Length: 120
Image 1: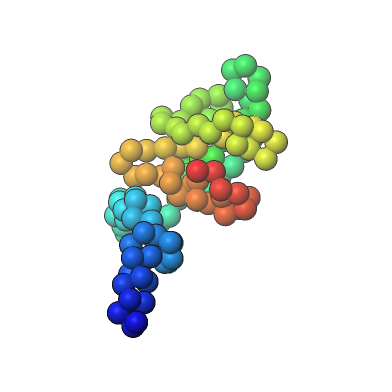
Image 2: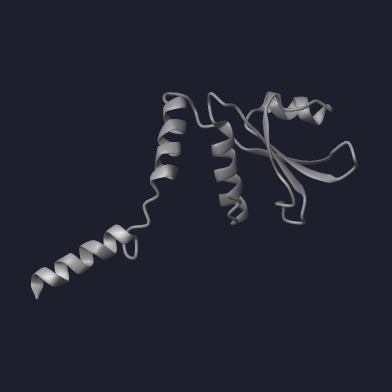
């Protein structure tokens, strides 16, 4: 009986019916992000409202003061991630992004924590 119980629990763990909620893909992405930022200070999220070309409300989320100033003066982020209708009032969210440093992952994580939401 003990063996059957052990086999049953093992099968349930393998099937994902019980367990710790570990997500291998998310862990790998976080490890990659953390490696890119090793020894560097974590970016500070700067959030500010604006309008896009069509006059729609947009919330910009920058990771550096220089990027924030560029966008406030009418410029654009070099790279960005857009989430439509994801703001508190349905605004478009625009996060600064970088394929080498993965800054968007920090900014999205910080935005989610600040606003108590899950974006992705």
